[in-house]
Amino acid sequence: MAATTNDDVWLVIPVYNEAQVIREVATHAKATFPNIVCVDDGSSDDSVAEIRAAGVSLVRHPVNLGQGAAIQTGVEYARAQPGARYFVTFDADGQHQVDDVAAMIARLRTEPIDIIVGTRFADGRSESVPPLRRMALRTIVFLSPRTRRLGLTDAHNGLRAFNKTVADQLDLLMSGMSHASEFVALIDHHHWRVAEQPVTILYTEYSRAKGQSLINGVNIVADGLFHTRMRK
Image (cartoon, rainbow, N blue to C red):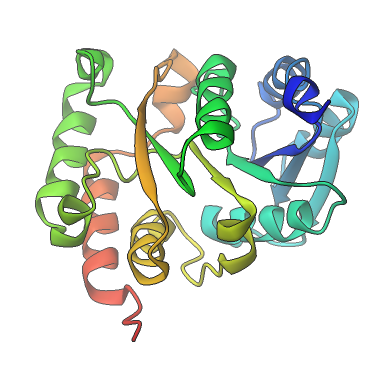
């Protein structure tokens, strides 16, 4: 039954001041994936009320801790739920597509893979990425030998799907956006079987305004290079 109802899948959505869109995003995703936990990361707008209106699970941080911390909190909540087998990190701003999640989950069910990372750099999809953001993302990969060695082309893509092995071992210490670099380090350290999935990112006017600028991308690179944990 789980294979058709997705009752064994949990979407983790970190939320910070996304009142304009989070109810629509969560409601739309809920039609395919009934188990969703939104982690409100100290929002100062009406995000909490909108999450509750969507009828999904809610966990709250009393103050803003950053996306990495929100993802860790959400995964800890989801992995404790009975029957949870697959987990997805899903953005609150409407950029990610439910159909892409469905394709990733289907692969996790049938292929020897522990974690799948979305990529914007396949099948000509990179043309939809704003030029400055594309440059920042390419630079991040170029400066990370580990990322290249793992065969990842878009390691800072927020759309990821993984199994319970990954969820149980996930221990993100980087609370901000540089958690993406830490995800790569954890893949390498734990020898999780990793693959990429071509995905479509919807760049709306709203999501562009909320997205990472070029300078933020450079800061992420620097944070990843100098603060990624050394694991033995």
